[in-house]
Length: 172
Image (cartoon, rainbow, N blue to C red):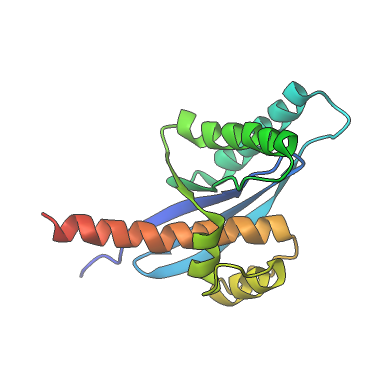
C-alpha cells in the first residue's frame, strides 16, 4: 500500500492596517482543499503601535489554531498616497514577521501574479477573484473580499511552490 501525496497546510495573507485577510488551504499533490478563512482587524481609533499589536495578536491566533506549514503574503503595491503606503508597509511587516518568528517560510507574490494565477488576468477585480476562489475551493463560500484575497494568495503559493519543487527535483 502506497501513501498518498504529502499534505501541506498553507496560510495566505492579504495585509492591511484596517483589515488583514487570512486563508488556510491544504495542498496534497495538485489538489487544494479549503480549510478556513477570515479577517483580523485593528481599531482605527488606537495608536499605530497598538494597531500593529492587534494585527500581530490576531495573526498569532490564526497560527496557533491552524498550524500552517508555510505562509505567503501579497506584496505591497505603491499607492499614490505615501503615508498610506508607509502604513501598509508597517502592517505587512508585522504580518510577515508572525509566521517567520515561528520558523515558517514566507513567500511573497505580486498582486498581478496572484490575479493571473487565480483568474487568468492580471487586472481582475475583487468580484472575479471571489468567484474563482469559490470555484477553485468548493465549500469556501467566502463573503469577505479580504479573506478571498488571502485565499487567492494561498492558491497562488500552492501553484508556484509546486512548480519550484518540481524544478528543484528536476535539477538534481
